[in-house]
Amino acid sequence: MISVLLIGMGKFGRTLGEQLLSMGDEVMIVDKKEDVINTLAPRYTNALIANCAEADNLRVMDIPSFDVCIVAIGEDFQSSLEITSNLKDLGAKRVISKASTEIQRKFLLREGADEVIYPDRDIAEKLAVRLNSSNVINFIDLDARYSIFEIACPAKWQDKKLIDVNPRKRYGMNILTVKKGDEVITSLDGEYVFTAGDQLVVFGDTQTILKFTNSHK
Image (cartoon, rainbow, N blue to C red; front, side, top):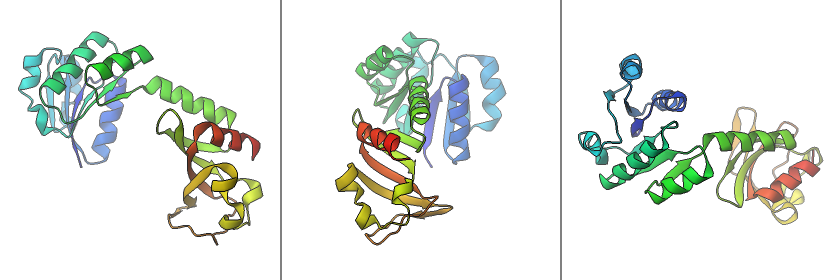
């Protein structure tokens, strides 16, 4: 369980807030719109009506006490910049800010954001990958080059041992785990035999894995 300060309760903020609550986190929500806070307040640990672009309003929230502060404002980028900067000045342990464009991401990082999320781009990238790679179930970008993918076991691997397939040497990918129905196999040895229906969690160079998934159905 973590303590979260969530600033901005638009569509993204509300969805994120619900997910955090479902995980048992302590969430304080803040928005400058009174009607929004009045509607959502009963579900949260704390709720406050405030314009967080004003540093004095943030000072009363004991910013260092939160494990993470999230700036989920989308429609007012200037306020998002000011809030991000003020949070860091007030001793925030970790600040995650939402961006709508690459330029916004760069400015938020300059203002002190520890991480910038880019929901629209991330969703578009994942959809594009899934549409062009039928074997890809899901993936996570780790940086500009490497990713973790969840892929369906290629037909040509089925009924073969891991040691014989040798994915690290032949295909440039490391298999982290295998999902077999409801079972997750984390300790794989060379004698493991792939079967139809296996879902493989693999790590490697993004473009290498995409090329592999497009050529091995």
